[in-house]
Amino acid sequence: MSRLVLVLGDQLSESLSALREADKGSDVVMMAEVAEEATYVQHHPKKIALIFAAMRKFAARLRADGWDVRYAELDDTGNAGSIPGELLRRAEETGASEVIATEPGEWRLIKALSEMPLTCRQLADDRFIASHDDFERWASGRKTLRMEFFYREQRKATGYLMEDGKPAGGQWNFDHDNRKPAPEAVDFGGPMQFTPDDTVEAVLELVEARFGNWFGEVRPFWFATDQSQARRALAHFVKHALPRFGDYQDAMMGDERFLYHSVISAYMNIGLLDPREVCEAVEESWRAGDTPINAAEGYIRQVIGWREYMRGIYFHEGPDYPRRNGLNQQRALPPLYWGAETKMRCLSETVAQTREEAYAHHIQRLMVTGNFALIAGIDPAEVEDWYMRVYFDAFEWVTAPNTVGMSQFADGGVIASKPYVSSGSYIDRMSDYCGDCAYSVKAKTGEGACPFNLLYWHFMHRHRERFESNPRMAQMYATWDRMAEDRKETVLREAEEFLRRMSDGETV
Ligand code: DLZ
Ligand code: SF4
Image (cartoon, rainbow, N blue to C red; front, side, top):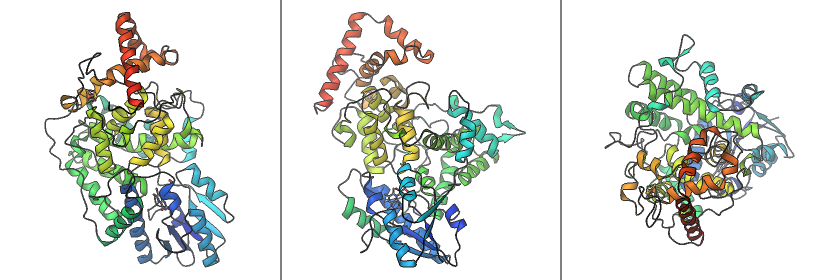
């Protein structure tokens, strides 16, 4: 009897464990665009378009390869509207009584599959380098789960950038070379763009009709939607941007949204690119002498270190993780995150870019939108929902640890040893935003003072009990304590006033 092989919208890899396990001659592949996945968060329309277009092309490729694929488009009559519903419908249609799946990247769906009235085997998702067991072995008995040590294990396990058992270049991490401020000009024209073909165009029309009024522009749409395009985008990045990626990876520029970033995270996350092939391409460029070690190491660390570590933490910590609120922050996310006018240029640029591209790079996410939410006391669940909604690469296994843990310090310090907070001076050093801002980054108080300068101290003050004994924050508390009393009072009063006006819906 045939079995159903589930392929989800972020499992578009021919090497998928469920496909490897299945029998092309007798099993049936089930793929479905379903309302439940498209609406459980209001994803950016570009993200939905990317996933649906890539799903349609992947289904066509499997068919060409001889698979029997049952594919439901969102508007098909009979579409059951959810993944379990579609599996049941296809089971009835084909007589299958068993489902082979690759474990989804979200607790919600893992649970839904395990509760179905069909036997569903969930196989390991071995597109990731570290298995759950590998991560547990690494985590067990450790007092802290810092990324850097996990990353070193991953380097040893994969052998990337290793020479005679030692890290190439004599050190594991070249991050101190990777903090150059924004350059005068960028000599990279940005990620490779693809003109929509008929399949993509049909999806764009569907998404415009169904989700066009959600946050985010669907056009222009230029993402890669199949493996061969994604590979070309990767090669383009490696050749033209990677050599400078390291130097400027933390810089931000108003007119250069992509700087030297690869913008391939979503391709990896939905399965069009394998993380190993990405690392191999980067390593090859370094071995050929085309890319310096700080760029190659910085990039590979994001893939085998940071990305795998995020997933490891998500599964290690359990289903309650995305809703943790360790600092008990309760303020509502202000409308400026949805594009309402703000005088803060760093935020208006980052949100405008996010709306148009469904993309912002890691420092924009961490030190602009994330930093502001943290120092303004926003409820981390609202921040997490925002990140899930607005970015093309957002899936809970990565977004929850990145937002709740790393960016909002709401997991009680599992991921970060101190909160990622800064005043305006960090943004000023790393970007060209402050020059054209209505606020003055140099002004610490008074008319026109940069809100980051006020809120930074407000955050430190209101969480003093939690952070005062943290040695990495001692210096900041010493600086605060040296300030004159009346100055401290002014800072806190102006910060309160700013927060009140923001929460009252005034343009700030
Ligand atoms: C994100 C997403 C969206 C928007 N739509 C679908 C869909 O219609 N069908 C599908 O199989 N998968 C979709 N996905 C991806 C799933 O939400 C994803 O597999 C889970 O969140 C687990 O990571
Ligand atoms: Fe952002 Fe402050 Fe700089 Fe304005 S002055 S861009 S608010 S950091």
